Length: 306
Image (cartoon, rainbow, N blue to C red; front, side, top):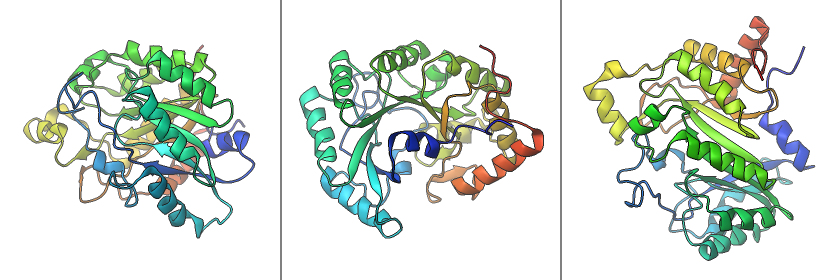
């Protein structure tokens, strides 16, 4: 039987003969969808507090955040190496020289062996892409784009500030430079049916994506989407855990078999999360997903059509 799905840990083993761990950074970036160049207020679902660990605060230098992150992980695996994960907001939004200084500061920290750069697909100018192309000749670079949805109506509704064509173009341009490229999507955005969501897997499979992260829609306190939910809950479908597992299986079956699947679930801090609150850690979800896939004879790409 084929592998159930392409795991991220196996992908990393292709590049590194040792264990590597991502350390999240907040490098003080903002977002063109907040400062007025694309829009104001940001995407309707966004509260960046949901993915900043304790060591990851803007008043700390990149070097200090990385050193504190290393201390956090090193007690478990003293031989661990690290990827600097530029995660909060839009990590390619700035002048090239300033970006270069931040990336290279991270790479100068002992045991940091590469970069993962999270960004928007409308924030990858050619000069930055060519710089990253040259950088990845001597270190690992993965660029991760927030695609969120392939449906332009959804992207307008969540105030994303770009359409899907912009995402597709950024993924193709990045892959053409030989840089591994990741995508991030949210399953269950308002207005999208199960059929829409499963069809998304086929659309994404047509792009030269290396990796893909997905997670369930979460309603986060203080966001515009949380207010929309309070006033019109009928516009939203919040999955229960069993329903979401079945959706992920169908989605994965329609994905191109070689796309590396990094994540299926997100866990926002309890104090910020309105719903759904499943109380599951990633490894617990993965265990349940794999068990159900085995029971159903499901595997990645089973229903994929070229």
